[in-house]
Image (cartoon, rainbow, N blue to C red; front, side, top):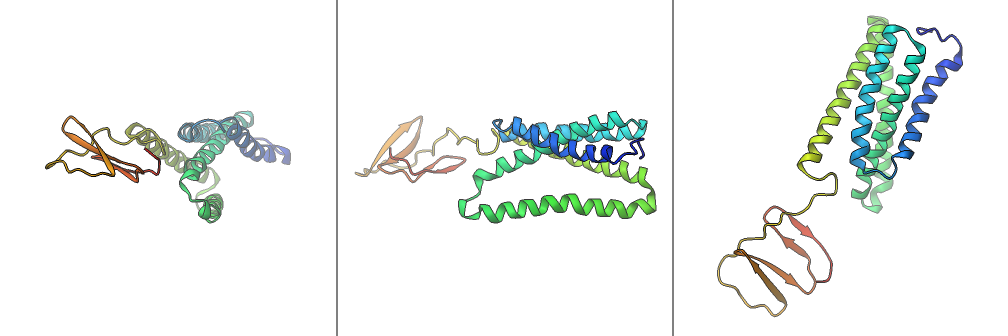
Length: 212
């Protein structure tokens, strides 16, 4: 009613566009890297929320629906990207418990702020609460975006870090071992066994179980 949409269909359309566009966008991004989905999602979420506040300011229902579509794009891809980032790191035996916790937190993130905002409307008014709610969402989305971009710059995305190319410096005399071969290069050594359990580098120990 604030934007002139008296019929219930307009109110329902905003919710349907948020969830529907989010689902469609998540499907479109299904083959993208999780990092790409999260970056796009957080950026779209912040942008869509800002556009929603502008639409409320100018009291334009079509503008608000378009902003809701942008917000839905961000909501869908950000959530699916986070889930795709976590899934490969969760052991198969723990996935049911982990996803139960993820969805519990997700629904609490929907419900608790809405209840708090509804309580504050009687104190500060609907307009002030909408603006405050939107600003909080924008700030959190931008923080998540910056952290994800910085993490990608420092490494190569989730699960894509490569071990250092510097091998452990050689110290002392070389000992003969019938079960290992020694490769020496530039003053360093790397021991390779018949069944390699771990490779020790300067910065990282990479477990492996491959035959060499």
